[in-house]
Amino acid sequence: MKTRLKSLLQTLLLLCSLAAFGAATPASVPPHQMLEGVTQELISTLKAEQASIGEKHERLFEVVERVLLPHVDLEVMSRYVLGKYWRTASEPQRQRFTVEFKNLMVRFYVSALLEDPAQLDELLANSDNLISYLPVETDESTSKARVRAEVHMPNGGPRVPVSFNLFMKDDQWLLYDVNVDGISLVSNYRSSFATEVARDGVEGLINNIATRNEELLQATRDKQAAAAKGK
Image (cartoon, rainbow, N blue to C red; front, side):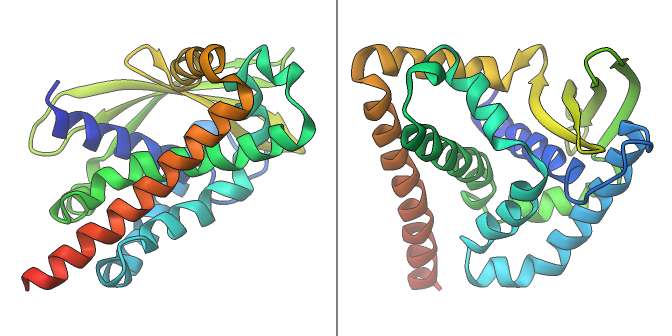
């Protein structure tokens, strides 16, 4: 898969994932219906914020983070990602890791749209046929559900199968993993981070992620500054 296609796909999936949890929804509402409705709500928000994002690119990080934080259980996702090392990490390390991992997800995936401003225009222009939801798998014994879907790439690109893994907490469906074409976001990060922990320790991993986050933010600022000079 070409680099640009991969970046755009990752961004589409992140935005769809965040859209799924952009508003608290009673658990009595089937997960796929909630996903369908709130996806459109997020797209509308992005369209409304498009001008401000154009003026300040990092504003897109802020918009996505505002949707993400209240409706994804970051601690549960962070615990799954850190795996066995979560048990040995101190409480301050767990808190720092959760914050830095959240920043990494937002900045890494969303920055794909900022590499070429036309990508955001392309995403919003094709938002009416962005994603279709398929039958839902539920497990009442564990209060978990899996919502299968297909992401439709713009301009006639391939349909990519995805699934959203949710669990019920306080009468609300919350996200804890996303699978893209059979590849788990949580498992992928867990494997990558395990290598870094073995080399640098938990503290070293957290510092490495914090450095990447600063680099992603600075790269966004530098690209906007360069674009402004070129006008």
